[in-house]
Length: 151
Image 1 (cartoon, rainbow, N blue to C red):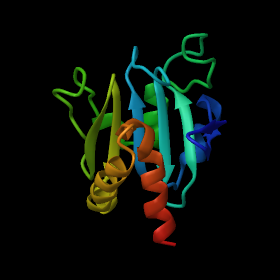
Image 2 (cartoon, rainbow, N blue to C red):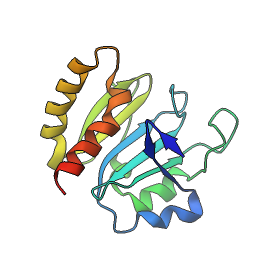
Image 3 (spheres, rainbow, N blue to C red):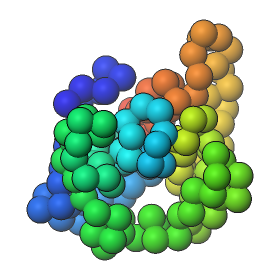
């Protein structure tokens, strides 16, 4: 799968163990009914790998993507246990060690504290350079740039 020009590793419930030992630095979660990848979860590891699964059962509406129930994903990505999306970005509960950015239309981004300040700085620059875009379309490039610079 390709999303925003990035190669994405799709996984389902049976492949969720791929996340074992991965240091996840960013996670984008779409609420049920969100625009974009309805029920989708993107996970970016510190090594630059990008993973995707769908919390909702595969359907035409979710794009027939691989499905991983939330309770299974929480086994392999424990911070998700602490995340509550609230309603349209209000009343959000973020996991410890992560900051929350509301991406609009039911989409949420969790950024690990260790890269959050740099993320904020680069996001500000990127949004000025691309006034026709929104953070939803830019966050993956920003996180990838941060990780590329640290190599």
